[in-house]
Length: 316
Image (cartoon, rainbow, N blue to C red; front, side, top):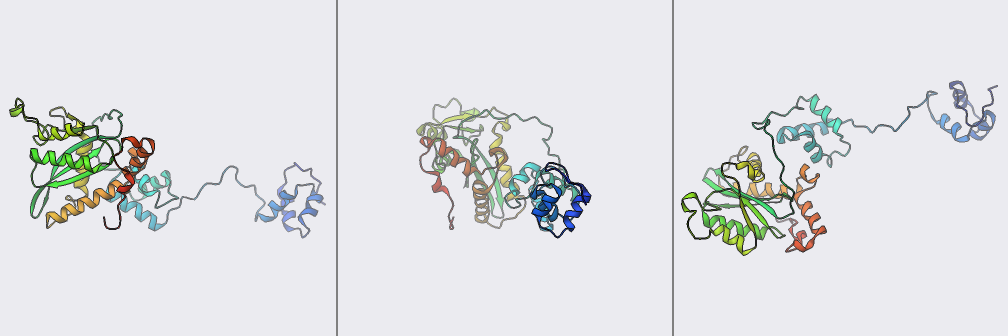
């Protein structure tokens, strides 16, 4: 007959096997062996007599073939860093962890990104500021019908983007775009940063002209401070420059457009998806629109209208 054990004693593999083979009730076995009834129930349910591993059980991170295909295709198309891929796919693949993502990229030999031209350059971060600091720039896009000028504005804090298309890039166009920027953002803009192009400021040949530049006039009307980048230092306006490149990488560098209308429609669709669906690492994996909603919650006084009116509808 098995030895009588007190309630706090550890069971041996022999006693566990006897508990699993016995036909008596759990209470009777607990009284017979001097064990807690819960201990008897635990070992009668287990298929073996070996001790289980201590600590929390690890969550399964095994990815299916379909999930790995999504990860690989997303990485190859976007060339985003590991953390950015994680932030964009964690909602589609809830069980995805950073280590599982890294192993998946290694298996498919795409864990290393190609080095960029400026990979070795040191970048400085912008000074912290409040929402309403907008970077503005322009770029040329080309379709089969010819070139068109894209004007782009991006808020330094919320990352919300506004674009317009114009056939020219002169002083009047710059002022027209600035009026569109003021109307496009639901909150008060306090500062804009542009380069020294004639679209936004006087050139060296006309700097002694007493006429106020049309772009500055619009800024004056709305109480906006107009700042200029340091000459020959375009990276000072890096957010707008980088967003221009992001738009080109997603449109003109991979697609050919028969008409300017098709080109503009694609760019606008991309910008809308960026504003309302792109989760950015700089915003703690929120979208630009979500960051505007957070700003509305903290300080609605700086807003001209409720930003929830900006949510795109089915016919946007």
